[in-house]
Image (cartoon, rainbow, N blue to C red; front, side, top):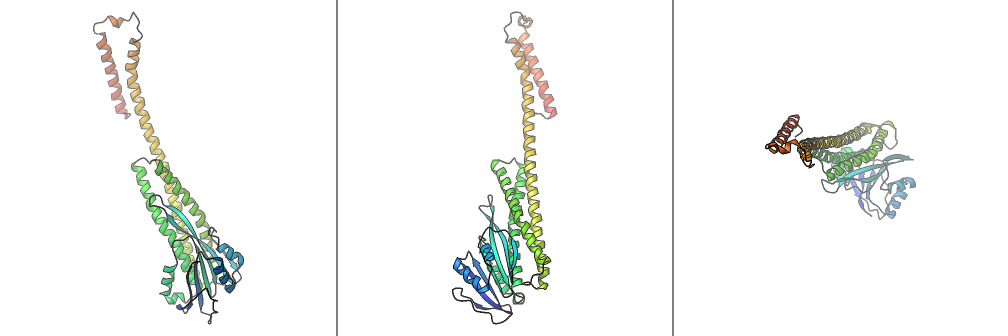
Length: 326
């Protein structure tokens, strides 16, 4: 069990800390609300919270699934949201995109988060909102927006790091030929970006639904915040698509440069083969050991033949050099 924080707020200010090992007290005022943050909770903790706030069993089951895709469901007076988080694992050159999961239960007087896998805790958001009570006093729906916006900001951080890696790969592909490890890295990164797009699609739909659907758990004046959230997710999606296109172009460019290099080598080999074919052919004729060959009786026949070889080979070399084959 990992209880990050459990607090009651009134007018945007901390009223009291909660001990989830004890029964949760009822809120005295309508404007009071509870904010509970859990990280990989055990069954007993989630059961106590479920019983007190009347959480739907299906929503609780989904909240405990760390691989659930982004979604939003309304269960009576409770709104249930699942958002995926991302971070990088591994060394800088071999970092892979890893995924986490944050489930959120939202009611008029409570917000409960269940976090799996994410390395970015919600303490910075809690600290930021507690420092701005004029925002926190608006209630759990503003906390919901802050949490989702925090998750999307994590997308930008990962994309910024991957963007630098992709640009570095692009420069290397233009300057030198990529080796096997670098080529494998290109395909691995492109596959990771493809998987990320499969997450961003539902996340964008989730953000748009907050704007297009009237939900009793949300105030109408929060709509501009969720429109801004949808715009952020859309921008991430565009950047990921751009990175995939860049990686594809790097792979294609690397292939074209390799073909060009092979073409140059092929021309060089063909040119040298043509040059060496001349002395080989002439020497082959004289190596047939015929008795009657006119040149064999000539005093200067050997020098004439060798000179002819050198002249023809030199002429071919100059010709291929001008053509750019050598």
